[in-house]
Amino acid sequence: MLGPEVREALLKAALLNALKHGGRAKVGPVIGALLAERPDLKPLARQIVPLAQEGVAEVNKMSLAEQKALLEEKWPSALEALEERPEEREEERKLPPLPNVEKYGRVITRFAPNPDCVLHLGSARAIVLSHEYARMYKGLFYLRFEDTDPRTKAARLEFYDAILEDLEWLGCRPDKVFIQSDRLPIYYEHAERLLEAGKAYVCTCPRERFRELVMACRPCPCRSLGPEEHLERWEMMLDGTYGEGEAVVRIKTDLTHPNPAVRDWPALRIIDPEKHPHPRPEVREKGYRVWPLYNFACGIDDHLMGITHIIRGKEHLVNEMRQRYMYAHLGWRYPEAIHYGRLKIAGAVLSKSKIVAGVEKGLYTGWDDVRLATLRALRRRGITAEAIRRLMIDIGPKAADITISWENLYAINRKIIDPVANRYFFVWEPVELLVLDCPGPFTARLPLHPDEPERGHRELKVPCDGGRARLLISGSDAAEAREGELMRLIGLFNIEILSWEEEGRCLKARFHSEEYEVARERKARLIHWLPAEDNIRVVVLRPEGTVEGLGEPGLAGERVGALVQLVRYGFGRIDEVKPGFVRICYAHK
Ligand SMILES: [Zn+2]
Image 1 (cartoon, rainbow, N blue to C red):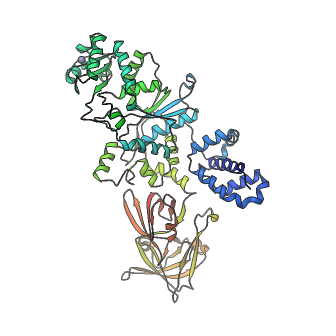
Image 2 (cartoon, rainbow, N blue to C red):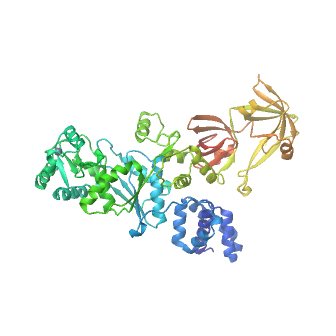
């Protein structure tokens, strides 16, 4: 009998194997490594196989970071040994060090989205960098939902869970989750502290009047009133005496600050709970009327949650200036802030409002519409979380603006999924290929993966009737065929093109030879094909449109979620399987 220690040893071997190969372990080498360490188990090899398969499947579900963390937790010396032999690992770029880490006991980073949309590729940078830095310094990574604007940036219930799922998929599981709408008493308490200390005031000036004064670097009449007056006004904000827009708490800054947006910025305001109910029922029932604005809630939370390093876009530089005044008033030390430049992804819709509006209007089929750059859409297309993580780590937290193309992401993803994806023939715009002088029926045995024959084969049978064999090839291949040209049907035989028969829309050819060497010597074009019968219908969803055609029946044997390569067409992910039908979402070439 195999004891639990064998499972453990397999898990360790699978983790090591995965870390050496970009996060994907393979069963064969894992068993090999186990038996090398435990030759006494050799007679039990057959029983070990299913256990190794389970272990490998489990490990391959984890992200690279999770694999590393688990190995580090259970077998730290094995991880050290692996890291001492960097030539065995795939190249993995490292992030530049964080500033002033030694000042803090433990690095804590956070990702703080408003739950008003699912996550997209643009948000991935803040997530991956914050998560990766926390891991790098054995610190913590927090998720904070910033949902304190039920009026103009209203959160939606469905997105709280969706964002957590997206993070999980990305391999960036938060160590803690906070929801700002649970924390209103905390914000109130700090507002009162600031009002009492004369560091904040309740301004009841009309908005336009305040703007005129502040642009002229002059205080409004409210600013010089005493704390008692402001605490009274604060009570009137809370009890409903003031209505929406009639009073706002402002943080005192420098009225001569060169940036008018920094001068006495608004911290809390009134939102009518009847007109703008909060989406969370447990918050709604409290009937809050006073809500903190972004800089107030975010600034208070970063301090109270012990965030040591904030990694965010440089559009937040002004926010840092604003918040520093409040930190000084409260006697707090501002965390380290790293501001990265803008990241543009050519051709991607990264506006949350456009995504939400598009889905609502039915312009998109859902959050995972393949035309979108949401994490859900990328996942559906077979873009791996690991590829997104690696891309974001490659880009790092540089301050300069950068533009990347989809090809940058695809190139990384291709390396990850190429060893995993099974190969199949997909013939788009099929036309008939009639082969004359065929010496008999053929059965093509094609490997599921050219580098791993042990994965098995697909068999495609080509009947031959009186020297005539009928096949299907893609219309574009037929259109490019020239009379007298030698072509090779991959894994089958070589043909010589005779003519294009317009009437029957059929390409006529003659059997030439069977050996691949002949095709190689004559530099023949290699094309894929299908038998005339027994194929399944294949629909490929691409961001730019849908392509239909026929495919090998084996495609229908793949599970939903499997990654495949359609030979000479590209990589994709199985999206739906029905009898005689497969839908695939296209990833890339
Ligand atoms: Zn005022």
